[in-house]
Image (cartoon, rainbow, N blue to C red; front, side, top):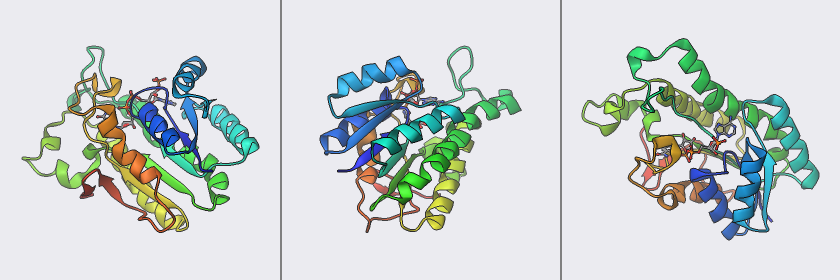
Length: 237
Ligand code: NAP
């Protein structure tokens, strides 16, 4: 039996990923920083969904989640999905000229430091798994190659904090994959998806967006590691 934790699984791509992995037979911990939202989501997902309160910016919350999952038998798959975008009061992405050190700190606190906090805390459990897998939910906006191409759609994105945070996720993916060759550790781009994070402006459904997250979460021990992929295949870094 494969046991999986999805962070930020109370809604959006995380919820859909949890739903699909449950259907594939995994036992899934639905991570949610708000316990009530997590219970509601796990209730919708059915009997094999277990909710765990997990705020990735909070050491105590992460430590409590590690103990609860360890006591229940351990962890095989970690989906680092929880993430935020930098949006101003009017709901639009904070443009480059208005990005401050505090804007960066807020986004990095969740997307970067939160991911490292969760990885560091769950590594001992993953190392005990026979087939450990980590999926880091990155973004197409993380690609330096695409951002530097004047005609690429990604070059038109106005902000700084979110793509910079996801570029860090890509580097962490490569470095963690090198450090832990027994694990399958990959970064994925789900594609522009209709969720709260995009103000529901995406072109894909969550079913389409979760496809590559689910595929990489189900990799076997012979699968690729240290990659950056979307549903169509490898992406340029
Ligand atoms: P979403 O619907 O806004 O979901 C984000 C999830 O992250 C929510 O469950 C949210 O919890 C959770 N979260 C935020 N801060 C957290 C924290 N400190 N601790 C724990 N959970 C936290 O957005 P989404 O589009 O599904 O995003 C999921 C992932 O996909 C993100 O990493 C995002 O960057 C990435 N992504 C999305 C798109 C897209 O087009 N949608 C494209 C590329 C990458 P609350 O409900 O409590 O806020």
